[in-house]
Length: 116
Image (cartoon, rainbow, N blue to C red; front, side, top):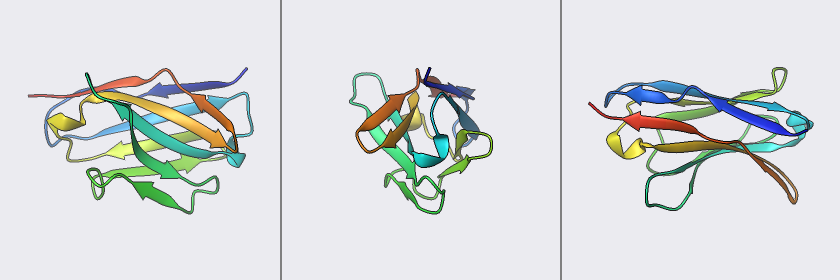
């Protein structure tokens, strides 16, 4: 059974940091490229960051470049999203996504709220 379980969300003040984790099981994690998406209230889901299956290539949305860092540990079947200098506009539900060819798996999401 495929599972992607996100954790690490919560309430943080502007300028603060969080690290999200996504634990994968039920598939060969090291074959899959991984992504973080987010969806703010009333908005469409948007791509935040991607990482290749080996972890050697990453991409970021323009509005998180320099603040967020995506990483993965294939030995632990886990990917991460380190978020620094958080802004209120980063408030959203963050989703983990695994992709290999036509196969795509999603987690249930973790809420991040940036507010004073």
